[in-house]
Amino acid sequence: MPHTKLQSFALVILRVTIGWHFLYEGGVKLLNPQWTAKSYLLDSGGFMKGFFEWIAGNQAVLVLTDSLNAWGLALIGLSLIAGLFTRYTSLAGVALLLLYYLSHPAFPGIEYMFPSDGSYFIINKTLVELFAMLVLFAFPTSHIFGLQRLLKNKKSYMA
Picture 1 (cartoon, one colour):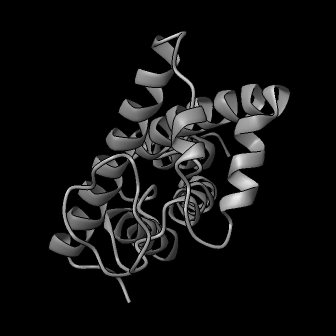
Picture 2: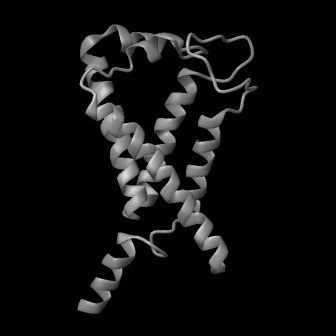
C-alpha cells in the first residue's frame, strides 16, 4: 500500500534529520585531530563495560575505533541526507547506535562521569534514535526523494 504524501514527507524528514545528526557528529570528530573516544569508553557501564574499557586501553584498537566511528558517522549521515543506499546505512546506523547504547545503557544504578540530559530509565535518546533508524530501514524513502530515485530514473530512461 503506497504512503500518503504526509507519511512520505514525514519519513523523508526523519531520514534527513537523522542524517544531519550523524553527519554533524562525524564531522566534528573528523575536524578535530585531538578527538578520541577514550574517555567515553572508559566511562562505560553495564555488562559490556570490560569490552569498551579494553578498546580504550589498547592504543591500536582505539585509533581504529576512533577512525571507524568518525568516518562511519559522517558517511551514514551523508548517505541518509543524499538518499543513497539508505537501507544499508540505516542498518549500519542501528549497529553504531546499539554500540553506543551498550556502552552507556540507561539502566538503574549505573552512574556516569558525563552528565545526561535527563533521568532515564532503560529508554534514552540513543535507543529512540536506534528505533527511528529501524523505521527508516522498514520504510525506505530513497525512491521518494533522493539520489537513489534519480539513479533509478536515469537507468530506466537509458534502457
